[in-house]
Image 1 (cartoon, rainbow, N blue to C red):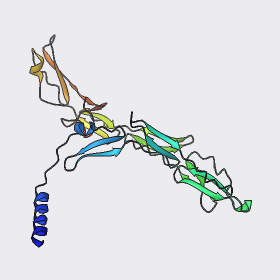
Image 2 (cartoon, helix red, strand yellow):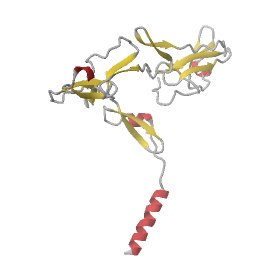
Image 3 (cartoon, rainbow, N blue to C red):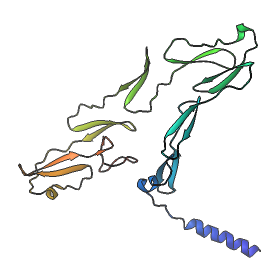
Image 4 (tube, rainbow, N blue to C red):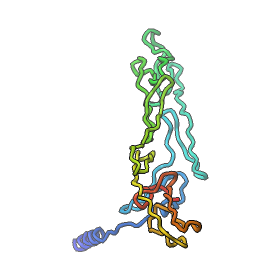
Length: 237
């Protein structure tokens, strides 16, 4: 019996030591048949998935249609069926139920609205109105988020570095980029293939009138291609 246990232990060590890196690509992972999961590739762990649908706030329940992948946010039902409680929902905290049989002076009024568009207003467990600053974050690295008289404001940032030798643009995921512009070199040609500089981030063609190569930057889902490749996780066009 001891020899069997030892042999099993040795085999498990060998199996672990012979582990290999799992090969996958974004394309192979995205082909997995599940409309409700976004699939990604981890070179060491293989394909993994993240639920496509997220609830918009604590007052909604999210579900996903497996047929077409559409997200459905359904408003939560906070009614506890108790006539002795007032039931309501706060977007950040979810359902609350407060006793309604106390003296009116110690119970929160139904309406805690302070008419300030930059606060979230609610009644807490101590029956007191609370006014917390509104979160205007839009998770866009190309905007400055603030709150004004009419609520949240998302102002586009300027990526212009005032350098004529760079091409400036903004990615919502990464922020500003400043790509160096190559000096214009007139390359003579008679066919398109003579213009190929093996740069994956540019298109090329031969102008048969001037017999000079023409180059332009490729785009990846609306963003210029940089460093000879599209940004990780972006579908290449």
